[in-house]
Image 1 (cartoon, one colour):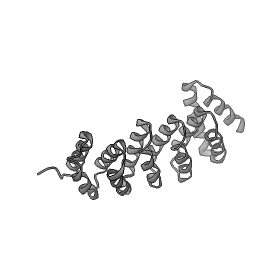
Image 2 (cartoon, helix red, strand yellow):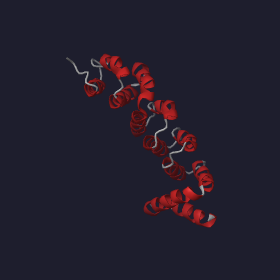
Image 3 (cartoon, one colour):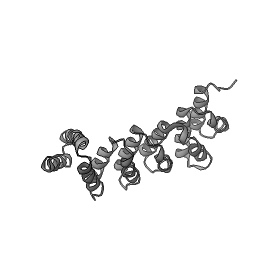
Image 4 (cartoon, one colour):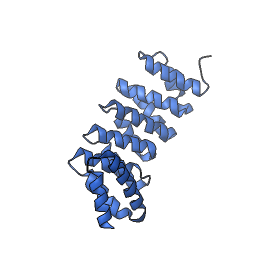
Length: 192
């Protein structure tokens, strides 16, 4: 079995994306029977100096929804490589972990636009548990973080965000005002 897993890892990191994606699927199936062995492999990949190998490690862990996978995803969300961070944010969006809310809030300040958008999408999936932190970002976040926070609040539709959304209707940013209005409309609290 170890030889089979070793061969799959070789294909995974070999540079051929189509074969690598197929190998990733096989590794995830392998993980159903031997989770400890696959977990060790993921650790090795995520500790690699090669960003491509780290990306594939995150690609694997992103498919795992258990709580044991969360620390790997959170570590990857702070990786120096933007593609690794993007993959981690996408994984957190796909497999929702409420405990990741604080780290995802921090990711709203990322320099990469896609990481910020994916983090906001993940916070939207978290839902009501993300509302207090998102509301705080509206008050003191940078412009991009504020935009994604209001977009997430509009998607969540929690009534606790109504006062914050009303306060943004006259915001200097037309996009922020748009999403505030959109959120209010979705909750049935449009301008009357």
